[in-house]
Length: 280
Image (cartoon, rainbow, N blue to C red; front, side):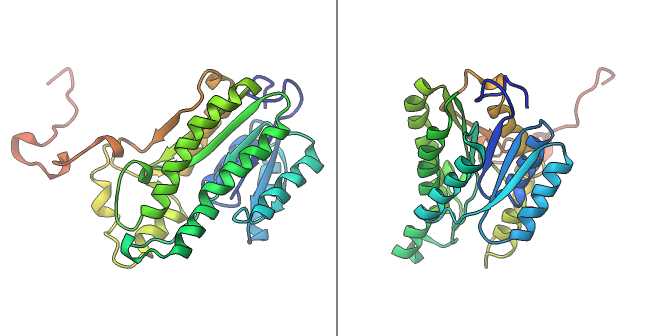
């Protein structure tokens, strides 16, 4: 990666991505690899997937290694950054991507669900950022992945959406406190992104509305891709975003800006016409 793309003033960039063995994390790892530099692939359980990601990173032109660490635990977060410090001695990019939650109506949420949601989503970002700052001796970039459940309410998403909203708030506070260190902190808020997580939410959560009922309400008329999310994160890690900090960029095809009545549900003269042409 070029020397101007945030963080280290010279040499290869070192990027740590939590939950990088699949989905958005994997797409970002490969995208970073094509820019050069070192990618640290964090994973919780599936060593085979993580090693496959590392192999693909190297094939794409970067270097990398996998680190097994359960960031749900404070010990896991510490062990992850200890390994980065031991093997690399520094860090330029920290991307907090790993997330998990139970999907339940609020009346069915127990104290243990709340505790785990906090431990799996918000706490790893805050503790990880604390550790990342210690390794960013030449400045750097921190990016947290969020979702549109942070600003919109929909069935069974209260626990994860609440944690994502908290993460976006922490992004703002960190941006102010870390700016004197030359560290930018931003978020990326994804809408319906075509991934294993989206498939689980719409096809495995019992009673969930079918995804087809949502797609025609997205102005872009399709889900986003993990590559589109990765490209947005890459922008926030790069030189072009040097004066952007404390912000959360929304990648949702327009989903979060529409409201009922939806264009897809209108008819007659209110139906959206085909794109006009100069011959019309």
